[in-house]
Image 1: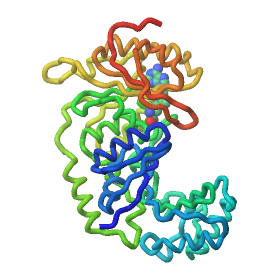
Image 2 (image 1 turned 60 degrees about the vertical axis):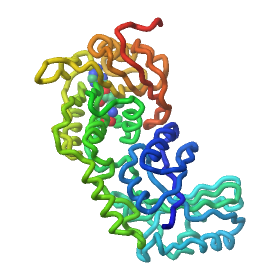
Image 3 (image 1 turned 30 degrees about the vertical axis):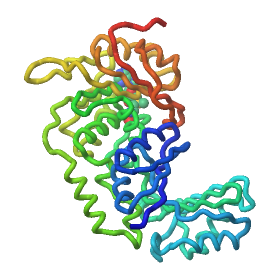
Image 4 (image 1 turned 45 degrees about the horizontal axis):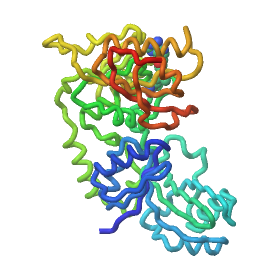
Length: 388
Ligand SMILES: C[S@@+](CC[C@H](N)C(=O)[O-])C[C@H]1O[C@@H](n2cnc3c(N)ncnc32)[C@H](O)[C@@H]1O
């Protein structure tokens, strides 16, 4: 069985989480580096990994590595690849080229020559809206005159699960929400609460995890357009997706709340599309009004002793109606008074602001969210306030 040399590309900072996911999916040898994880896999694993990885942005296969100081050497290197395995004749390609410290440095020129040599049309940005999966992405990286050529297997970025169409302010990438849930240590048989839920990303990602729904269950991938695509293998991966998903009630409360009515509407619409509308409760309320009684067992009335608050509060200096210090300290007060024994996992831009929660929190990973450098911190909620 032929093996692919592959790389799972992820946001810098979450490589180790992505690597652990790959190992859990049965990949034997992995190597994490800044922004990705290298590994080898079979075609079946390649399909399954696209479907199951929660934290990767995309998966590429490396098809060539060669030195080239001029165009002739570049085209000879390209000729070593069996392009018929990946490209259909009439398909347009997108080329993503980077070059540093190399003789061939003009990235547009490299892209043009590669497309011409492969006799394929280059898709321009105007062609891309909504049809990313139809344009095969090729990634060419040149560093110190060494070319690394990769073929994308994913198509649309993997954080686009397909269900988040309604967005509120500052939506979180699904991959970061997944990384937060994994590093929170949340167990899918315990309750989960996001008191700043916005469009519901964290709560919906959690509900789909608890339900055993693969993150990529509802979407297509670039490898499905390859001439070498194996429908039988794909059918067996799809059959497995069907088997892992449960249709039984989850038996836990997963809740998102936000003070913004538009956010709650967006979250509900997203949950509907994600197939978990009956698993997640979205409530319009301020963080100050959050109550542990919302998580009480309907039969016994008792509130679970363990659960997870996983959240992405607003960032920035000032927000409507107060400053961050007040908001973070409100979050901390609510956590300590209503949810002792639970864990708090949150994103924040700086230790000082996060410190206003008064909950002892340790950094799990640091990454980027939109324009912000953010840190994901987590810790057990106790009734005691740590010394300032
Ligand atoms: C960074 S956004 C969360 C984005 C969310 N993770 C998503 O993926 O869409 C922060 C949210 O906090 C909400 N918010 C701000 N102040 C609040 C408060 N005092 N109580 C509850 N929600 C609040 C905002 O309406 C906003 O939706």
